[in-house]
Length: 96
Image (cartoon, rainbow, N blue to C red; front, top):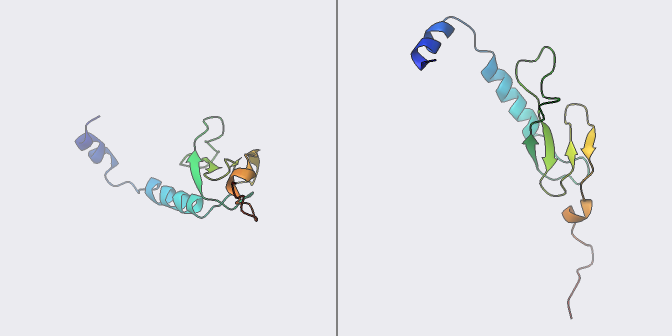
């Protein structure tokens, strides 16, 4: 459909998608890994992304440090990942 026709059809209707998407992005940006505290990236899973009554899809998050995958909406951990990849050893290992 052409942008002009789309714009004409949407004229006079309230934009509910942009505020909802902005709020959801803020929510995801505020999350950190429940196992190591690392930063996360969004992952879309078509089996769970649509929730009744919501206008935009949900995502789950994957830690960039330890690869833990979790649902930030209910706290469920989907995949534990490897915390050893995220944590630096307390005593440095020095090669001989």
